[in-house]
Image (cartoon, rainbow, N blue to C red; front, side):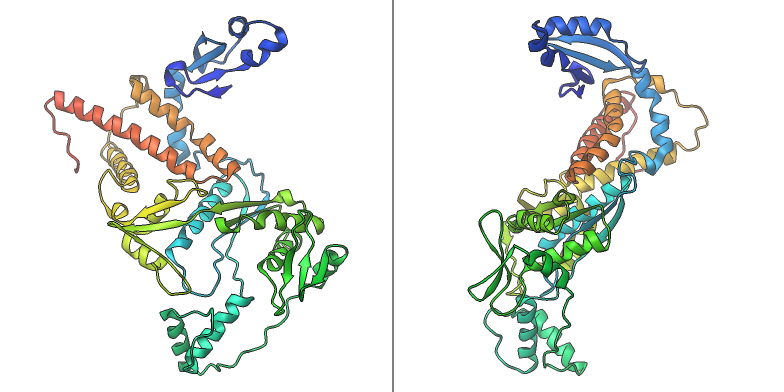
Length: 443
């Protein structure tokens, strides 16, 4: 049984006759008619029809739909929540930007995807921990340190170094605090156990570097010629810490799409360590471009150009940033239109969604003094019944979005709900108009 795509075909469609046709050697429509005649459905279901080539379409009773409204209202913020996670420990790690400069606006998409995924999992009964991983080792961090040191000593920035204004600000502050520009030796991270486990038959030394021998036939560097570990080596150690030391049942990582090639090799390394690679899920987040008027703003952390996250939050606000990033699947590239995000009109989807909520809240405020019981059976127009059907899908939307780890489904659902609210508003406005009563936008 599945939901129908066309409301005129009912609420649910049984497709079993199509699957049984070959086994029973009968036309699907014949099986559908026999099965429909034998079906005994609960009172919540009303009309049952058979449609070619072999569908059984079932419609929910209006009275049952109307009867669900009170339970939805009483549940308040608990509506849609479930316990499908059964308390399993799950960690969602997101953003984890290389700490070599300020957070740019492009990092915000991973932040929104990670945070909303964590919220969905928590609403579905998982024990959720959020984490931002600060990777303070490696070549890029060394170059950042050397760039700051050069600024402090009034020397040229090293090749491949960082030249943004923020580097000068850090160097100025470090000098003011009398911090020495000389490098400090970092303590070694305890990696002996992992090294021994992998080195049994997976590590090779050649070309002056240490390599992981992959089943894919493409070896991966663990330790580079200069003695610095690669991100791959850090990822192995980090995920072993998550699963074996901290005991998470599952881990969700939110990575940039340019790291797609790393997923398979990290899972392979986990399997070598005796950790089920299926416990790791990776969400890939595509690039974001920013549009101001007709201009597309390019970003580069190393050159120190682009829009900082703080700047964009100050300009359009966190609500617009969150909602806009959820209007498309995380694995699809998107363009963030700053002018649209600032616009206070129905063209701006987050503004209109919040406006619809505010109007409904006003209805409840002005209607709070009415003491009569609600006459739910009067809510029988097609748009009212359709609004009920959409609202009743909310628990499934939350569950399915959590299981698929696709937070954009929430924005899609909200847009659908807002569209129905617009239909309700238009109908009410027409009714008031026929009565000669004003339909104000503000009260």
